[in-house]
Length: 436
Image (cartoon, rainbow, N blue to C red; front, side):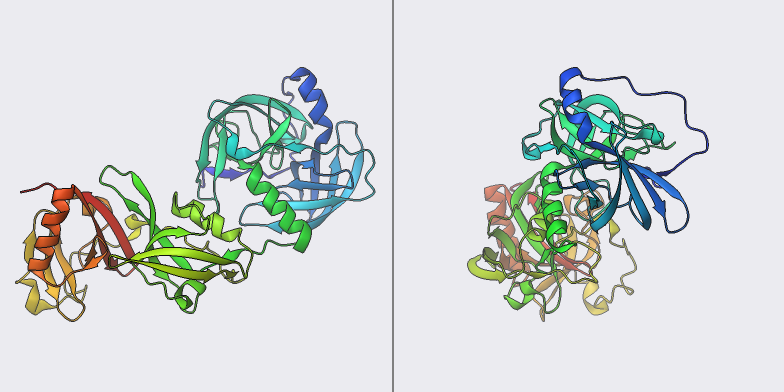
């Protein structure tokens, strides 16, 4: 069972006879009228509960996409027992955000948004939602973590909080102590389905971008370059502010512009190179047709390339530039199954400095790994038997002696960047070398 539960819940015949503690005084009294309790009659004849909040006096409001999924009828109510019918404007399943429009609104009070990038760990926050159909209820906590990836979607970057969030809170706002929305309650971590002190909220900055896209087009049109990237890792698991291209999709904007697997990205416009997930999210926010200047390092040379962002294909169910999971690579030991050159396996050379035994393929100028030290840095980073070492510090390798020389030079500096090819693409690993 997936521990990350969507907070949509069907109305139970008997509801628990309890209610949340009251209020945070003036600030709660100010923002509570902006929070909506949502009841959805689905096309399957079932009833679902959730929460939402008002965006504008003319009736726009936001909730989670899973709350209004398959909705036949959407009803919303305020703390004043004002009841309205609403219609779905658009939903984005990749971020679980839905925009709804309240019919014939009267006296609605919109929320104010905070800059979620400025949220810090330990900041006091409070959530308002509709737990178990009880209506507006308040819970208080802190920001426990930021940029959480819970594998709910390709753009996960949740705020984590210990404010009590239960089933029915989906789509409700998470406020700071100024009464500004910093996020929207979206998921909980729970084995039993109730609050365990670990809840997740979509950050307000992401939320606002999605809302504007849904309001304009009824859908989210994302930018796309058609490549997957991997971080360049150091031995201590730190990363440098660079990403390496792992896989290019055929006829994609990246491939058309001349990029190649193994290229190291020094810069692409103002896109973050912090990690593949943030890179993916930033690319997605670019409008199709946007031209991004890129600085690429290849074989020790610096290339200046212009990339034209395209619209993400509709059938694409994964994010652009999604990081590949090195642990997902098969750990095959049968060399014949790997298609290695049997005549060269016995002539493989031991490069103990980096923990591999490999032979040189003269046709491709690559070293093919036939043995890998199990506790080596390369093994820890997901490099496998059958992987091909083709570059060191951005420079091609021209045989065993050339590799030894390059490793010796790298040892004098203290570390080196090695690039490997495999069936899953290209991986760049930074390791620290000791002089012998």
